[in-house]
Length: 561
Image 1 (tube, rainbow, N blue to C red):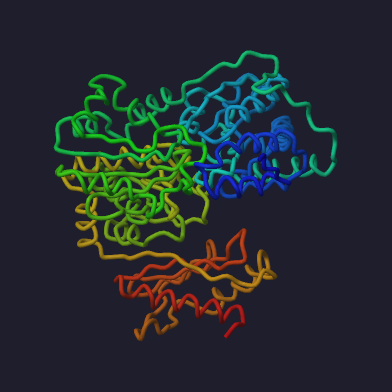
Image 2: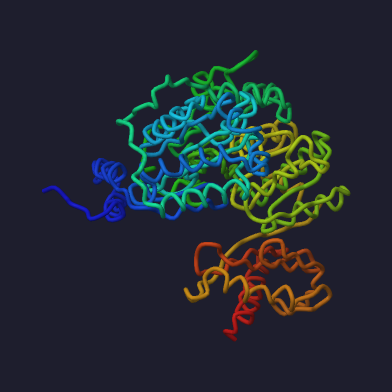
């Protein structure tokens, strides 16, 4: 009996209820994606436009967003052109646009639709095929392209697709660019003009599709930038008693470490390393549905990596999980998982102390203050930004007066000195191996040494739901009183202990830093009726009390107590 569905959402619900049984229903999703012409509200969040395939992310809406990007590129608005890094539309046409995708369902077809529309406007195009976000970032710079359109929703579930726009510096598009695309696309949606004529499945815009090897460009990029010592990494893997496990979660980073290690002089044969038990790769096969899991570098998803590490007796053991587009990573060794809150601080210490790189520490405001403690002792400034990797750009450019030694956010994204303006999981993987090679320690041992010297920090996050009527601006307004009420020098009772506020940071929500180095941050969700809590205690046992303080302060601000 053939199942019928009124919309893509109901079909996706059935597919995701049992991915092994219902995989064949993807043909129904493709039909919705091609035939659904309902408009969608186009919103670029912290990292691109995302929508459910067949519901919001359809071929029709993708054509409209691509047309909006072209109209923006034709703009005479100098500020927009400056933000993109081009002199005008003629420059865009000659320098070209890189288009590619991660491993999502319909990725190649979506990419060809975009390429066809760009070519119809006389724009030079390159097709990257399946590629990771950091490869796009490096590839734009290495090729001299005007920009890139990367079709990925990052770590979102299997029913999502997405689009990231990268300007000529390779970074995530700033607000000036994304707001312009949103305005034009939404106007086109409202005008209800007949949609741009579709190309045939896998069609073209009349021109040849020139391919570009972004992995090759990425390898050249990291070898030129020299932040990473690839030869030291190769030598360590080849000569030491070690095992490295990489879980690609069926994503676009599969095969990348192999090519990096095999490429250039002294390259390693991965097949030999696998035979010797030094490297193991998990989930590298095609799977649009990710085996039914959310493809994110979460604590739960690390089980496969941890099993491999437990079963090994190697002296050095390290594993990672990487999301589908390669911009998020989580580390582990045989003793513990190491989330980005810790690894970012470790990277800062390693690059500053062991590699002698000069600069500042940069992190989003909700991340661990372990980095702050390290920086304070080393006499290095720290800059805390709003959530969103694009906010790191002012500190990552080679022309920046204050250059970041490392830049990271709590949600598993990072980059480093002289490296990509996009977050890069491959960088995080390679850097971790180099850390082990230089320090002679597993990651948890290195972290213990750092904490013993600079202090112990225990970050966590939580939150509470609020009434739907508060979502958005009303919630922002109500919570803003926290920063006005709690001032430096004020005392709070946290778990029976008196804590004095030593700093109040209102970059993104309100962060209260206490005299013992613990802190809490209260931030409204930008998309849901929720208040998010980010906290850090100085002992594992104190976390509950800090969470309780955050909830009490929030409820007072909302008039609930």
